[in-house]
Image: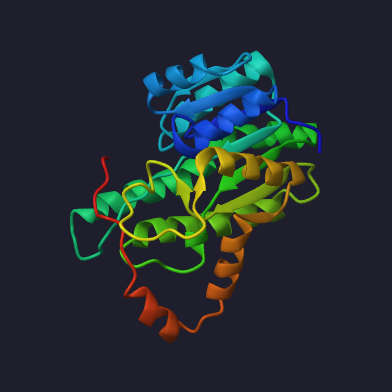
Length: 257
């Protein structure tokens, strides 16, 4: 696959999104970078080589994304790759009434935000018979994690959504890829009070993501060691999984909405 020339990335202000921006910019790509925090985007943009555009938008607000997508296409053309990376995570407990709003925010951002990211580009990509849609999922989609029901549910839904979209676009020339990261060292994971096996630095992870994206797989788990673990977990009997998972550490509750 040729090196992408135009890449549109959500959740670009920090963590994996910012690392992807740095890596793609170093390869000479023109970027459209989306996040809620314009100040963080401006700081990132100042350190990138090349010509790029930043857009202050919340992926939970589809009209904001539609405007950003339209402006990017008008200035730079249809992107070669669209990466729906924006996501949030928080510990949740169903019995806590206050966590209902957290469930709603996590699902709206992680799932519906991905749909809203892709939607403005798909018809034009179909007409061009080209383009790649990349959704950042998680190994958390494989089994439900105690204390993280919202996040696990959102990523499981994302995985099924990407599968549906991939089949819908089969034969159109538009590729759909799911990237399932394990633990990545970002602000999202720094609050986790438990061991995180095979954890990667964000810049290392970004390079691996891009290598996978270049291959345009249907699905790729990064790092590969976590892929083996996830594959095995899928076949662990529920009783055995429940016994060990109930004793695992849990992400602290709370999410700034």
